Length: 270
Length: 303
Image (tube, rainbow over the protein chains, first blue to last red):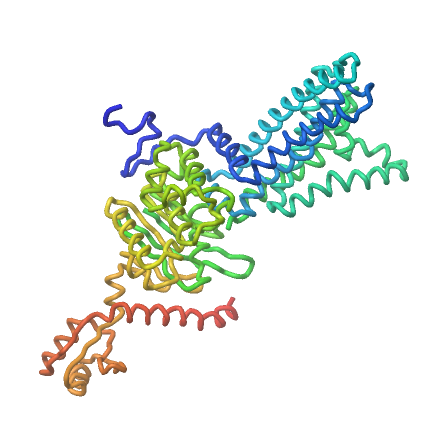
């Protein structure tokens, strides 16, 4: 290094009228958005809670589950459950905080395409989703070996790769509900409330409705995303289930997500 | 250079910004002056694409903000120093800016030094910052990409007098290096200290604009003589109308040269002759904004 102050062209610092800057690559936006998910105390602990509750779930399964339930699938399911609940909040808050914390006032002046920012946030959430699922499968494996050793039963590996992948997909579907709500509402408090209404309250109402109304019982798998999502967690059996997941996903996530994205693009950031 | 062309923003039937046009030139500090709610912030948000204009457009060095490939390298923006996630540290906020813009990591420390935030302060969460510290951090974030244009909304807000002087020197150096600065304020004294050019806005429309020196001159002349009555006679003879101030001086809209000539012709000895400057500009500011306030009801019935 001699007089040059920079190692790449884009790093050159000049005070002239330079206007030939390279566009910001998406990978850089993703890296920064990923960093922003961890760099606040609340964000850090939210993601840390996935690991912590996952470990607690493993220990609880070892300690309390009956010996015949100590199979790999049950471990992976127990560790994976907190991910299913917390991940959508991570995805949601990463979007809504730009409005609720007003940091969008700077974020969107660094990257003026809001579509690009939201896309980078979604990809960051996918990265965290996949990483935390890998953690869940690993923690589940350890729990399975330790648990069956303590209980003195044979270690059962009853989770196929294909089933593991649909579980990951199931978690990504949950995550996308958070992304959709974040775009649609752009408010942390409102988004979280709506999220719990959708994943906790609505399934109860629809199961009541399905129990009393025969016509809805047949319709439910097609329109009730939390319901058809259970196919993904239990392992897909047939093409109809895929079609049901796709239809319910379109109704719950794609369509409102489309309107949400439009509102993200048009809304005023102040 | 920032070129604002017929920028208008309407919310339903309410017009917040009404057909404003002006240019912030290279090498100059342009002050955007107006009372609270005059439309300054909305105008600035429209310049950087955070608010979509109803009509008109703003360009920065000939391009619209949305077309800039890496905006932070060309335009430094600070619209609200408090609009940051309170849980991030000052250093983290600068690091985010540094990484997204792709400038060397050393810029973070350089900028902290430039705005006089200590290492310990930089490691504190922004939620614990005073307004003045937030302003300094906001300025650092705006400057980190070494842009040629700065857009700053109320940057002197919350700064103590020494801080305002510091900001003046900083922006002066920046403009002297060829940079363009547009800053807003609702305080005339701040703008007067910092700006070269002034754009005055009231009720969403531009009420006056020009170089500060011209506006000061336009604010009129203050003249004083031992024999005030003789001075008034001399000026009236020359066709210059005057008002008598409380302190015994005379004020007029005519420029000092004309007043001096009239006094000379009338044989009156002057003890003082000068531009009305700050007081005059302030009076104009109040007068202009008061005028637009009076205009508003008739405007509504016309709409």
